[in-house]
Length: 128
Figure 1 (cartoon, rainbow, N blue to C red):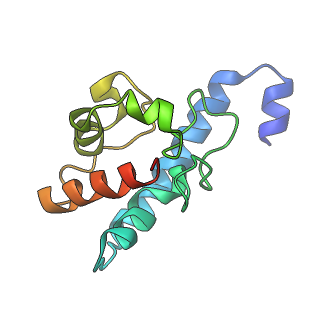
Figure 2: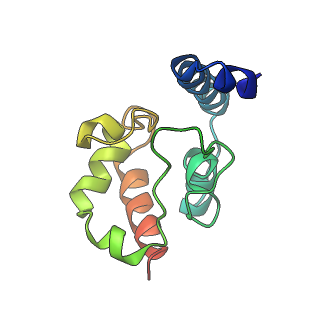
């Protein structure tokens, strides 16, 4: 179906369909919250769908038709450009909060401050 839409020049329809698919998948994940006992489980539950288990930006929702691909946390050069505050803000308030992808959801109402701080440390470790 996506291939047909692309061939017909319906890029907006593809973008809308992708956003809806990602939002539905995120809603399914959030409606049944993980009983995370550690940060790895938090990352795998909330972040890995897009950023991948290994943090390379290759999760199941990271498809090439997205206007912006999820960040590769293993890229040391790119990750060095992001302050801890940027990363905390994007986790709490979503991609648009730092002028990044609208696909990145806000987790500030879902995760505790401790969970968000733990995720920052975990994400930083990918680039070491």
